[in-house]
Length: 540
Image (cartoon, rainbow, N blue to C red):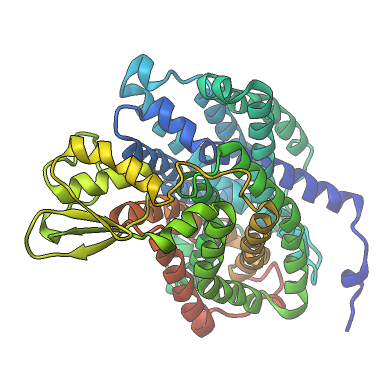
């Protein structure tokens, strides 16, 4: 039956709660994701002491460092939120995030102060991660505890749009500055401006959130004296709660996280680093897909109030697992058709004794990869961004086959000198040709990836809020969310690109999100309960 709650319009106070909570969270995501959008620039500014491939992977690792500490932020601020309240806790997290982001814009580069520059950058990323670890759980809990029964998925879906809206806002700022200043000025100093602008956004967001009252559910518990005295112990020291933390992590959030980061971040990095689409164009293509896809967070949040949270999240994971290889293959053909044609007509193969081959990743920048023919070949191909396969041979010098042409690898100097011309003759482009890029098809493919994101992410906040008792909700839901999104999702670009660098296969990195999505599908189908009919103030 349709209830009054189902049909009642949003009251002004409810709109204020959603708008204020969402705006503040948009700001935090804007801050957090600026780094990811500017990974290539940050590589040059802070990791110029190593080779280009290693520098980019290290830049992604520094990006991931912020995700690594998010679960610790969830524990610290989740506990505070369950002890003293939702509102004040996420005011503190917002202040930490804003100050850290502003400071990134002031950091001297590697060329100015050497290794101290990336160390300071990582320290600020850690502070950002701690703050974000406390923000999301507070905002989602706060909105859910204000929502009427039967509309919790719809209400919290606006919080789910904030990560994408924050990314979209960051994209618009970066695109605008790149266009206004030009690539040369932007790369030299203009990249600092998006970080510095965050000071203004911080002031506005803090002022808006200060107008809010405490969550009614928490206020009631406080008045009745039923708030938890030891939320960490209750949430993780008692099996009846801990088992749901594990089910939430493995049966919902881990899969949601890898689908989210594949669809919005890995796709961007893939366009820019592997398909060699210029940064400004890649940003605009992603921004267009986000503009089209973002309303579907609310659509799937609303739908989860009707049919349940679980079927939508499970369907998103299943569709991601079966569609990633075809979608990224189509993306290659649409964004850089010359590369796709060259791969098909003149595939590159490194033929060498596997015992002579190293993994093409050097975290300290001291390996030249010039001791064996295999290392020389793979290092040169990795620098050029050329996909290759491996063929084992028991004896003889290493060689590279490009189509029907076989090149023995005698020494580094001669091989490095010969390779560019041979690749050009085989049709491998130095970068994507804008004239050949099929923008409409690329946007369609990216939109399909974003729609998968909206399926898994739209209902997740409501599910997590409903899964845990109100007295420990902030703590209990925050930890699995931030382990899933901070570790399973946050490390995805680093892991995926390391897999690509190690194997030479541009699609190898997709095995990671597919594997995690399948794990979540299995665990979720077997153990995850449906929650959409639960009361928000339940205590068991």
